[in-house]
Length: 222
Image (cartoon, rainbow, N blue to C red; front, side, top):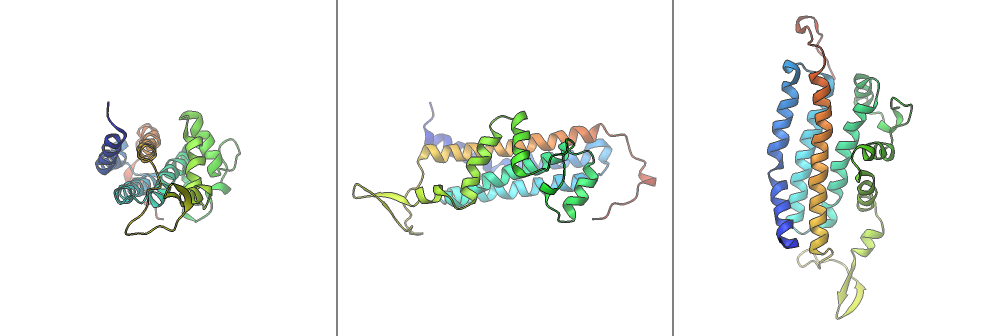
């Protein structure tokens, strides 16, 4: 049986090569439906590029043992899945994309059931398909916003006594156990996989669209 430290190293190695899978999937989306291009494809590519960069940032920070800065990347990766999942929940993806590109808040746009698509609503809807999303959403939000988690992360044992301490960048004290670090890395992997699952739903929808007449299809500008 692998130790928690070995499992952590394995997770970080898996994350360090995840960009290959994302890049390949981006090409698959662009090549879907005989390389027909839809405006939603540009959002999909943005999600893929952001996902790759978030993973790279997470691995860099984790290897530097800077988990307070790394953990919010799990929530940001989940944000990729939530915001793109919104495409599945609207009546008109192109209209939603226009709303998005106009800089209007996603939570001001209504789903096909008439609900405002707040992050909490999107997390509940995605949790119905992939249980555990809502729980992780709530937990990781605590690391994005200043919360009790950051107070706990300022505590350490000094000469057998629990105290608070200002960290030293050159010699930081341990905030998280190896088990916690493994769980964080595992969750980053799971959220990255979830992004691919949500993107794949768009690819399947796109593959089932009728072929467009390219000669009579206007160029979309945004």
